[in-house]
Amino acid sequence: DPKGKLETAIAESVVNFPRPAEVDKFTYGTAGFRTKGDWLDHVMFGMGLLAGLRSRKLKGQTIGVMITASHNKAEDNGVKLVDPMGEMLEQDWESWATTIVNGQNPEETVKAYGEVIQKYNIDQDKPANVIYARDTRPSGARLVKALEAGLKATNVTYKDFGILTTPQLHYLVRATNTQNDKNPYGEVSEAGYYKKIGAAFRTAMKNVKATSPVTVDCANGVGAPKLKEMIKYLPTEEECGLKINVVNDRVEQAEVLNKDCGADYVKTQQKVPQGFDGKAYDRWCSFDGDADRIVYYFNEEGPVFRLLDGDRIATLAASFLGDLVAKCDFSENLKLGVVQTAYANGASSKYVTERLQLQSEFTPTGVKHLHHAAARYDIGVYFEANGHGTVLFSNKALNTIWSKEPESPAQLENLEVLRAATELINQTVGDAISDFLLVEAILAHKEYTVQEWITTYTDKPNKLAKQVVKRRDEYKTVPGTAEQKLESPKGLQEQIDTEVAKYREGRCFVRASGTEDAVRIYGEALSSYDVDHMVQTVADLINMRSGSSG
Ligand code: G16
Image 1 (cartoon, helix red, strand yellow):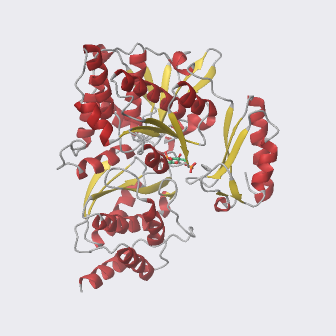
Image 2: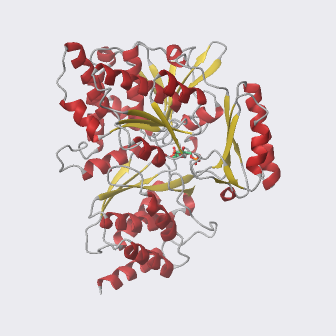
């Protein structure tokens, strides 16, 4: 009985990866499972099982597993599954991920495995293919073993791609699943990723030159070695004018990962990272720990810190692509839109609708939500304010852009840049390396300095704070409000509303983080004094209710 054999194999193997006593329940959150690396072996084993099931369900298409805790501390780790076209795991399956890793004993794990088979009517004789990679965290190598045990127990064919950025793994999943198609996404190798993006950047920069150098803070994470590799495939400084300095590249020192540096630090602390030695107006940017987010910034004299976050990248990209679309005569044909979350600065959304005259839309936090919304446009720009985002081109857009016969030399030039953009941008997920090169190309085309970029609109004073609470799962938002209204704890939203009404153009919302044990508070108002006061008062309201520790 092959089914019985499989069940025995799972039961025999899972005992080597027992549940840690410290965790009550694992939950597949905003970005998969995340917690201390030491507690994740059991979860990895379960994700091996589920990745195999997902692949079998999808007729053997390759599923990706990424082992990373991204912006979180070095001792944390995490895991998320990647669907065949490089997008995040289908939401329906998230609850199965939660079920399969929460078995209290081997029998329950086997039972959960059987339930997925039944629910999705999975033919166990179908092939299953999984590829995986990890970031530079020390626990990664051990966790890979647990993942492999789950894959082996259920006869899954797998391939280890070693250490990669999260977006590189997403790229490889899509490249693998499209390699025999008419339009393969790219070569199925890490080098294939660099080649594709490098060639696109070269084309995009053909007729322009960068006027100043840029420095990249890699958060002491996997982005550092991978960006250095990428640079080998880019046009040289002599050719395109761009000099790229790489800092915070100490990947061999685990404890400095994301420590006082990286995109999350810069965005939430509103400060330059450790190692910053820029002069006023030097252009800097920061990746996060797995290189799927990027933010730019500079200092004015003073020094006064100025941030160019995900909203700025979204508006820059939307305005640039919008212009190209118009110059290529596609405006009638291709619908462009910008997708953001409630964390987007109100001034950026206003700029999108009023200045750029583009559609704008909001979704809950989490790339998966933005991605799906952006996919409904011909050209969908999506970015979270924290710097996580990309641009999606529909098949219609790609066909239109690639089949057009240019009507003039000028139009040909624009068409070539637009075509290059479709190749330069990682369309599977937000990608710091690809977004970085896109921004650099746009700045070169627009001949923008950071000062010119930041004056396109004026940010509303804002603040993003964090409040540690005992039970973040008590904080639930009303569906359809882009997380801007709490339904529980009861009465808290009314208190917040009363407070916010005191401030001119005040806006403030509270939601539970999906990646940290805290609730986030975002506030905006006409003056920064008001914002600080409002956010502090709301934090106090939460603190009083939950008797929290922070
Ligand atoms: C992850 C998600 C992002 C999200 C961020 C913070 O980023 O991929 O979509 O914005 O967590 O989420 P939360 O506010 O729920 O903690 P990363 O870079 O850590 O993978």
